[in-house]
Image 1 (spheres, rainbow over the protein chains, first blue to last red):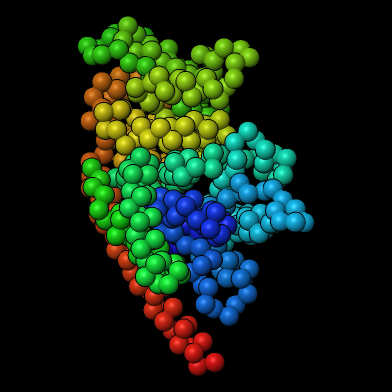
Image 2 (cartoon, each protein chain N blue to C red; image 1 turned 180 degrees about the vertical axis):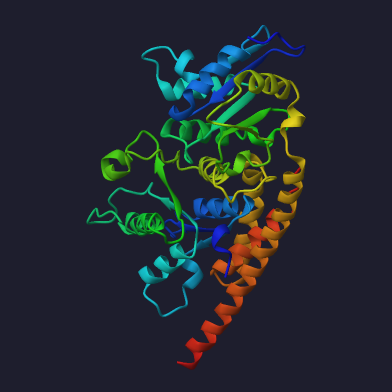
Length: 203
Length: 186
């Protein structure tokens, strides 16, 4: 199991539309010297999903929660509440840390223009990073947040060079998916991130 | 005020919390000279200005940074915003940009400041004249603000992080195979 101090739990949508952004987060977390983790790492287990997520969060010192998808979807115009629910678990762990449990640092990624003040107003007091829905923006926000953390170590690739490596990462993931008959596994994503990052020269 | 040292003109941004604002202002007075322009929000922000926008502009204009930390363990919200800006601009990756942490008391540095040489100051009796003189020299010698030993340790840590990533993916693959076998048994 990856070291707690270096584990970053990623809480974001896992559908096709969000996939490029998810891959950008994974590559950025790994590029900054941390180990990306998410609910997908325990997919084959019989344990309920929410328990697996809570276990993942509790064994990670850091977590990133994407709250940019807040609008209603489908014929019933319902929004999905999984992301805020899982952020709530992280906040609980954070508060437990203040009473002696292990420390947990979290951030939420939100859309620009403070719209999150309307749909999750309890976060209004936190200065959480915003991004514009693009991979460059999410890399910049995640890279900056990680660089502020006590377990971040220099040297590291710049956000620009992470973005430049993203195409290679995506190409490898697409090829892997084709070879695996349309399934892209979490171990494959992690493996390709390591291969791509080992090719970046850091001064 | 110190006399000017020979060197290029610099814009220096001082990042501080409310808890160490008095030190920031005292340093501003001592450091400002013919070739050093010191920006401290408490003095240089126009009344009614958009604080966040002005901070961003001042950070983008700056080619040198002094970051005051302590004596309380955490920065306030204002300084957090400044750090987020500094981090987003990735100035810490540029060894030609002097970034000097000044630690009042004993405080852990955030990751992006760890490979910079910090200056420790006694929070109860800070010698501000000596501190200003040290900062003036450091600002004109960016390479001296980098802690090369820590940078070297960071290189080893980066290699270890990539090895850990490889091991984690293997561990996941082994678990996948095991789970697939168990599903097959059912």
